[in-house]
Image (cartoon, rainbow, N blue to C red; front, side, top):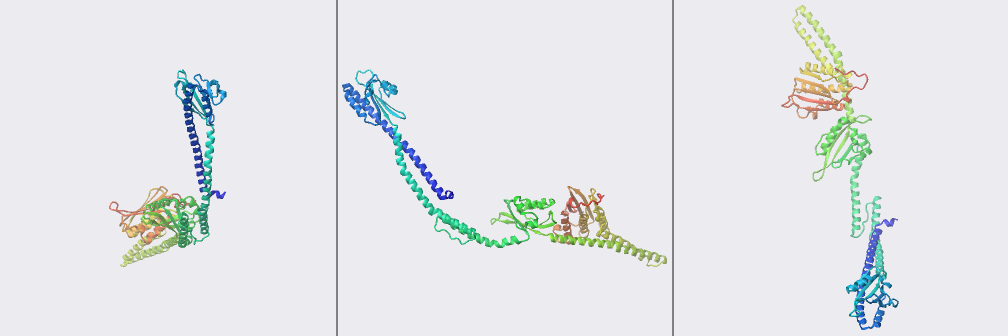
Length: 593
């Protein structure tokens, strides 16, 4: 029943149980004390009566006043506790008794035959004794009926005290009944006091709670200054504070629900407490429910090649280090997605790190636009290369041929201009070679089939003709067939790095190395030009901007190492996963030499 679970019932029941326990303990203790006091009193009575009667018997029998002794014994018979009183001579024959039927008999023929040994013991010791068991108290005292008697007689008094227990129980009950009535009255008074002071006020607090659940904030407080009143006042204050906080948070909540960018926050002490806004499913492409059950589920959307970088950056952030923005291509099944992650730290007032947070921007549209622009630029570059090769180079070759014919004719006629025209034909030949090299740089032969070694060798020739730079291409092993797009990106990265080294770094030696290690294609472009100034990966130059675009498109990484006093070569290392580069069609060429 519901009322049995109330605080009012529980407190009353505790009081009733405690009082009943005390009364029960008092009942038992009172009964024991009563029995013990009656026992001690009866022992004292037996000792006093037996001692007195022994003295009387000794005096009476010496004077021969047997009738006087019978009268004295008859007085003892009026004691309701005395079961049997006997006066025995030295031979244990009953001389006088409280019941006349035992007179003249031997002690062994009376109901007290079991104390024969005790009687003989007291006669021998000539010293009285009082013994007691659970039912009786027996006093035995010797006396000398005659001065010359060889063996003393004995006074035997046997008292019963079994009914003392019943008297003790009745006395204890008479004391426990008023105590029980007082306890019951106290419980009833407590029941009413709890109803008035606790239950009724708790019901008012419950009403306050229901009003708060219904959206009411102006809640009337309980009067008074007791604990329940303080609780009610604190509750009303908390409700008002919560309402004020809710009002202040509404703009932030609306912003959190409507913002299209992903916002996340995580406590440094409890990484499992990860908060994300509603844009998580749209931007990250995974369900919030999965994130709540597995707080590392967000890492599944990151491509395996980039997970180590992400975890390293997250660990640095949790240790209080600043990290830069991170651009990731998410491994989503629906379509390619790129995001830019910007992180920051949240500190307590004392300066300790409270949590880390971040904003993730979906940059897929701009990245796709950059790819389209790069593709358009590449298409235009190829068109210009073909035009140079198919049109300009042919025209230059025709002009060179005409200049050669003109030089021959002028030489036959001995004209002074023959040498000039011949020199012009030689310049046109060199220009044709340079133009062909430029055309091959704009439209390298072999990229359309995934080859990379041959275009790089043509790049080396172009650098030689255009900038007089000695460029060497090294490949440790045959490369797997690359898809044309990936081969184009790798070539353009090498072309941009080598050209920058020749034009801006004034390099005289350029080395391009290709190697496959641990499922990665590593391309190292080194030069002996001027050391890098600052951090080239942060540069705003257009060429390096295109390099970063191509590196991101490949899912690759790039590192710049400037020349030092120990190593006077600048190094640029680009590493790309082979899985993102290899050709997927069945018509791919065999590995290039």
